[in-house]
Amino acid sequence: MRTTVDEIKAELRAEFRDWSIITTDAGRWWATRGPKRGDQVQAGASCVDADTAEELRARLIEVCR
Image (cartoon, rainbow, N blue to C red; front, side, top):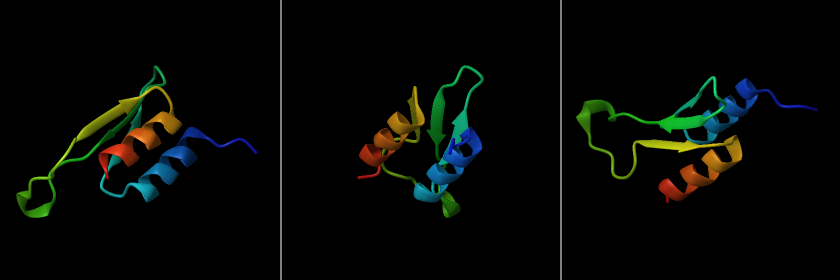
């Protein structure tokens, strides 16, 4: 069974709840996160990009350690 982009994005959003998952028309994958409630500053990256969903997942795992 083939997985759609929307299904992959939903899986990534469920796995990385603080992140927004975005795909571009060119097929690039992005994850962004903003300040938390109460303007708390988050440590680490606030934007990650990759060529594939699998690469994005790996980069997010690395960033979220």
